[in-house]
Length: 171
Image 1 (cartoon, rainbow, N blue to C red):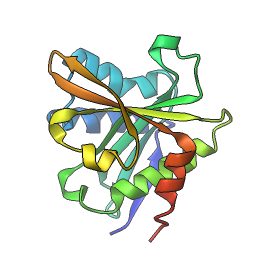
Image 2: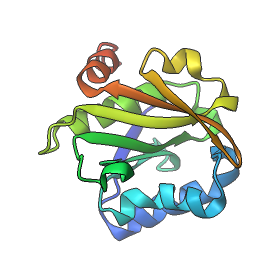
Image 3: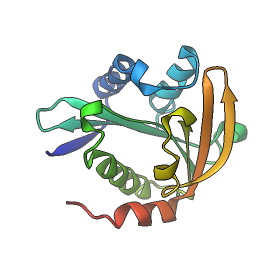
């Protein structure tokens, strides 16, 4: 099966991105209240950073991912740090190469940014039990208690992440 990625650079794609994620909100398993979750999902659009859609060969949206540059604790001035806000795929596509191809697309895209990216950060609900997979991609930096559940915070050096992801090549 083939896929293609679309940068959500126009209002119509940004709208598709948000609608897709809101339609699958319950499946996102976000351990935050809805207002906080919505701010995470919308922040790449609102902060004019990047959101992406994944389409199958029938032009159906089957996934989305996004990031922002900088961290809240530094008022988003540390733009050498990328925070991945969301990576989500429809259930049918989760056991395909789409995840790998999405990560490859993302690291290639980020590597072309004018600012040199040094670090990636992302958060994952503990109940998803993805720590074995994620240990290959990043180091768990912290664990946080939220009102809706426990999340792990992961950090990775961008260059190491890029080298690891790209070694699988495109098939």
